[in-house]
Length: 473
Ligand code: F0G
Image (cartoon, rainbow, N blue to C red; front, side, top):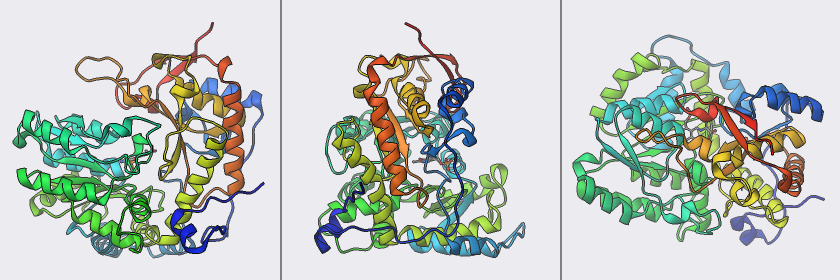
């Protein structure tokens, strides 16, 4: 049975008619289903951590949408135009102009991926003792802020921590919380606001234009800059177009640019929105910040006209940026995520609502109410999904949250989630059906499942490399 979920904007325009992807498939990569025995061996060898599986042992890979999207024929053709000069590659100038054009910032520093840019901006701006408020933490972002001596403080609205709240902009900053932090810490200690579009750890939840506009006014009163994690801002623009009064007829590209205009700069993991397998950048309006970042990039990434990317990578990225803001592209991308979400909701499976931009997030607390959070219910749920059908997902709960650097205790986030992340332009509707059925099978067997014990824990970003063993009765 094929079902179609019609995004509101299109439904309003045409009535209930199906839509389809604005592309056809020119090349395929075979994938292989494994046996249950093979998967039992593979997950045990991987220490029940889906990051440690070999991709050859995975059937449908929903670990991440990062670097896993399919490039277009134009992007592949662009690879042949790579100018691999060490300095001054023509592809850099094209990329720089494209970022200036679509995101609107003045100065661009290329990096190998998002965390390279996070490193540069954190080192350039943060002094020990600074406070960095933001709309929920992201793993690598917060770590770089902490390594630079800063303290991240979550100022997202309360609804973001509630997987059942239907708030249309669960990524919004709570301006009251921010004001209280400024009053308590002093404006001079609040180095910048770390704002993210479609907040990853909250379930891909968007920020409204009204929120960023009012945030700007508040920050202007204290001279506090706003830096944006633009990683999935094109997806955020789609939600503004769909949900915010006054934006239904504005193109995604215009919404994106307006949003960025309320911020002082951005860092980007181009491996998401921009439809490339590797790449990133930092872009700012302040020339002094640019100078500092451009100097640091040569220490950590590469010369300031490639920053860790090959010339061909920069060409593919410039083309990917143009494709990423096409309205029909983004509508079908988010439409596919929603399609999977609606199947799961119909079957009563607990997920984060409303469905966000890049992924479906299973609510492991409601899925496995009998497993305590320090027995890693989301980690176990991701493992069970792999065992059932070779589908690879990712834990986004207590393991990802890590330990408090001051107390050394686990941080217990309100959200204990498993992320089924949809790569762009890669899987079909049938893959979504197979995925939904697998989740249902794991849900039906939920009461037989127990938790995990962590048997190895690395110091940084533990979720990538930690190892676990099933608890026995
Ligand atoms: N910011 C956000 C919101 C991200 O989702 C990521 C990466 C980064 C920054 C860091 O960028 O990976 O290019 O160094 N997220 C990936 C994910 C890893 O699976 O969500 P990066």
